Image (cartoon, rainbow, N blue to C red):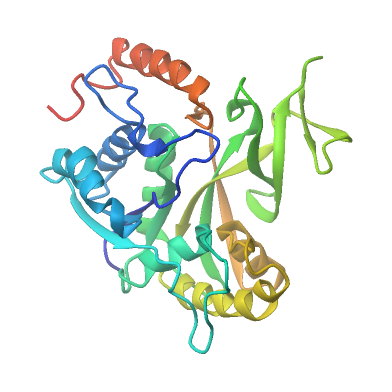
Length: 306
């Protein structure tokens, strides 16, 4: 099996953040969150990263990210395009929204051949432990009767912001194996304390801080790609007609469907690291402070890339 590849999903513009989140500077020498992810991935063993971006943003990524990292890792950009739809299908009239994280992963997977790969969001600071655990898994993973997949699981309490709501995949785990993922699109810290989610904006249900959640850091063997391709075709047949302008092909939903069909096992690799992100503009200072603290402790050099 070939060396594992890191897939970075960076095609989405941050609507709640108000700009291109991967470009937000958080390090003293102008480093971005994605710089720290690439640095941690390189230390874990990844030699190549495939970036899924919009074609019109290639120049920005080349200038702001790729030019600084290319001497340390191989970088390959691929473009997520709205017009990339299954044969016989067309883009619905009025559709401008990208097809989602599942399509982003598929865009990269098509360029990888038989290489195993990890998928990460460009705007999530996930910590070194996560990259080491997913790299080690991918080096040893082998498909048998079921696809041999993995997910890094975080404690919910380590992944929420003080500045609004977040979306998280809430996981059911038994014996170290993922049983299901339920996407909760509105989770936040409540004024009276604790964490809760709502589906209608009125009724709130508590979630314990130790709840295992997905930050969309998955490890996939090459056998996952055909399954992903097939589910993308199903998505167009079954989901798009009912919601042509907004239906999204979410990567965790694909994983969940494989679990339900008994076609995959997903090992949950736990991480105790705290997540940092810039979901909102107000989040940036907390990330800046956290990075400064980790740099002072010697966890990262400054400047990061020398």
